[in-house]
Image 1 (tube, helix red, strand yellow):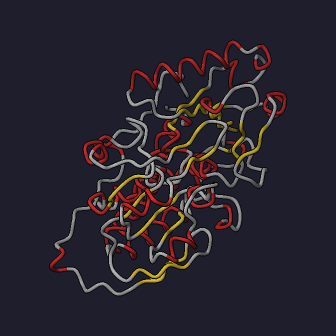
Image 2 (cartoon, one colour):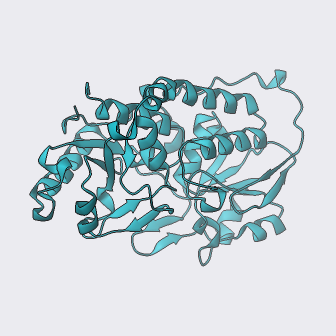
Image 3 (cartoon, helix red, strand yellow):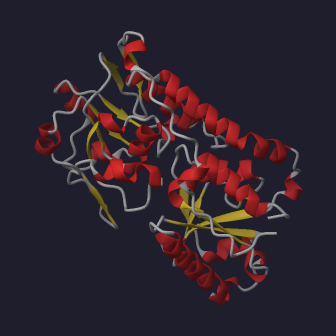
Length: 346
């Protein structure tokens, strides 16, 4: 049975262990690689990057799981305190941060050309198209003209990479494989991927045995994005895969898009059995618990939601955005955590 007290804060201990560094002297000579990214941009990397710039935290985290933090010369923007696994905190704190940032209602403020080039990057990584396309941003074409390869991740927000609903984590694995090739550490990438697969395998086996009627309908409610007109994640958002693998059914899985704005009337009409509250990591268990409790109070106090099964039965689940709604290694942890909350024995 789902309990509103079962807060889920993904700790360092529940994510796949960072792969051990191989002895570089034993590594084979690097062969130049050509890698295609979300935009279809093909970059030729002639040597493993040593001064990469990660413009957004999502791609930074992929590098950290590949034990490549020492190859990061600067961050486009610093991650929010506590939003990355704890074992990476000291390393990330020592990384220089440039002037890129996201502003609510104003989108992405990019790192200016001069500032970015002053780092002398040998690779620039983005997670969202705005990292390269926002007004004032240095485009991938401009970077290439300056001899700097670039890579726009597939797993963060790349709709062009999708051929159908997201029901698995193949885009995350493609990013890991591509980065493994670029940095000359393909074995590390395969170990991280294998760790994710091993973690979710028991849950997948159990979930595959469920009939649709036994899968509760789940509304993923991103509380920090606002309550007046909630975002409804569709089947092209990674949370769709997390819910499906955990044994549930995304309430808006019929929407062939990443997100759509819906009125609460539509949520009420669909009458979810579970409301999955998703918040941005606040940096501590206590702060997250308080925010989850605030979200639950909002749902319980809302007159419009009083007849919804999830509300009347207080069937709330909890996940952190950085693990559940952003493509990455911690998606495997989100599956395991949500499955435990959806389970009758949870």
